[in-house]
Image (cartoon, rainbow, N blue to C red; front, top):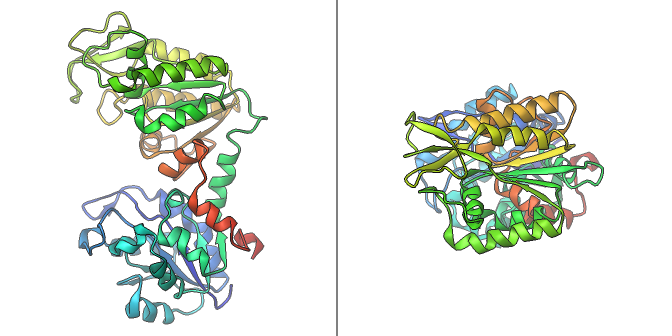
Length: 395
């Protein structure tokens, strides 16, 4: 690597408020790859997107504010390039010495990034000699910096990407049985492919969040004014039928927390499924449901979790999700099972409970995590597999 210019596709789309990074976990997970490259004398060029600027320069979506955080985390200066292509980018990259690192400006300031434009990918590739994809969380997108650059440069998987793929490849291992999946969130329609794939792959499928309301409605349960998808009722019945044929046990709420509105600290009550008031809204799972979760999941050897089981963003309706996180963390610490979690809301719930170190593996990915579990090929992984070199360890 010494003296080589290495383009590293990262995912620095970190949460920010008032110009301040509120969660640095994505930065910290990149450190092994970036430190190794720098210490081996590579000239390291970081590529990333941030937000959705729709192909136009937007100062509020500049990557410049991340430079200080990267420098502090890496304990070495990180330079900044005001563009990712053109003379400005080329001159900034050419000025790098061995071991130095530069972050180039937001890829999505150019429309060609998201369209997967070949000429744009070629221009990005011309800045370096080697390409490293360390952005598993973006590898479900056929964008220029993900699938285009590997056509023009020797390409490798970074340490974080390899770690993600290794962890997720173990999910459907026959050795880790019984296997359970916990799937939450609001809509069946957005996770239909996931649910259809999981019923044939897992032994237990826990369905929570507003998505569970559609399943309850499909079973003829009156759910008041709860959020649900009436057009997905037949689909929900089909998933229940497929699960029965596959001998996959589906676990739906047995009791729920109901409120008139989803406003913070509004009055709420625990109801059985037969007692949900006409004007009430299901906001969370109840204590009996949580007990069922514990009884069932404690018999499993692996649990994969995506999505909150209640209206997590509103207190006190985060209680069920936080209790689930504590339950899984406790079982993991006891060595009773392995736990893999992914998705922004899920990781936020785990962090909120102070349990980020208690799970077997936390994936940085959202959409890529889901598509992997759906059994889809990820374009970014396919692009690497078609290249002659696959991991940095083989370089």
